Image (cartoon, rainbow, N blue to C red; front, side, top):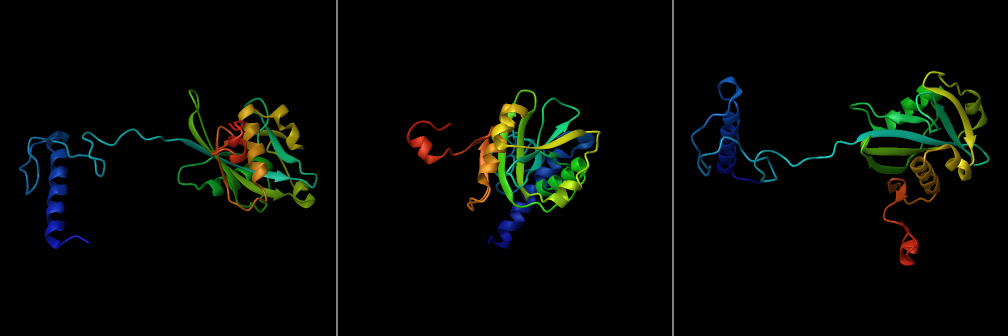
Length: 218
């Protein structure tokens, strides 16, 4: 805990930095240096990093959330969007100020018309490319979707035009390659009891130690 004198000196330094930025017409102006301050600079260092001129670049990934729902045969529910080729899991982009879980619940209702219980996080996947940029994708466990819930499914016929339960072994046939890896990896986390998995482009990171030991891991 700092002393009162130290707090007063820090406050004067912060006020000096503020005045330096708030000159007439928004132009920086020189201000008299307070105790312990350095003269000759119109900009204060960014807090905490000691770098003049602002903080270093930071990633601002887009984020999406979805859920894996299963039937009694262990097949996973996929939806067919109208706006892109191929299939996907129920879900979509997270809105500003919205949590990943809340976004998952909202997107499931919007796309298939039901609000079933959704369980814990299975995996979070980081991905990046030149077109989409950085992305974080949260996959939650929708668990077994009993028949009464399945009978209430209604696709909106706007964004989603079809849905079907698909064997995990066949997701590669209908999902983009990285999506299929993500779904398989998330499905494998179900029931393991050791928390959510961290993925990069659909691959578990760090890789399975047993695989890494023999050189066969990604």
